[in-house]
View: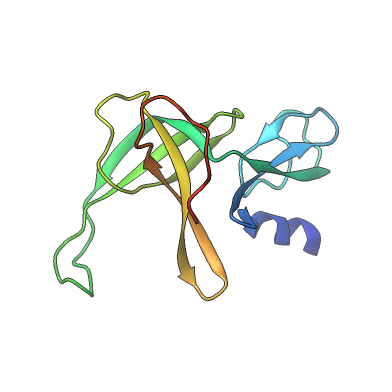
Amino acid sequence: MTAAVSGRGRMTTRCGKLVIWKCRDCTVLLPPLTVSCHSCGHGDLESVDSAGAGVIVSCRTADRTADPVCGAPCPSVIAIVELDEGPWVYSWIDGELPVSPDRPVRVHFRCTQPGERFPIFEPCRSGPERSGAIAA
């Protein structure tokens, strides 16, 4: 694996946008952290900014150990989100889990380490509309 390919695997954000990939050979759109096309096998991918909107395909609440800050166990929701562009993304859901399984979610970013931001999804506040700015 080349340095360019291994570096590509870690790129998930750029200027407040979620980065997905497009195969230059077959034009399939691929999720973040992809190093080669799952459709044709080629590794020549170009980065594409995602709108950051989608719907939850599946989710599960995972009980975690006690939080070091508040001391209480903090349940978390891990989900598969289908982006409007097509790729599926595995991520966390912030806020209350939508009652309707097709309720739209939008990406926002949480700082995890200096200089790194992790994409997390939260339910959209206003009905089915998916346009608007992505929270940073």
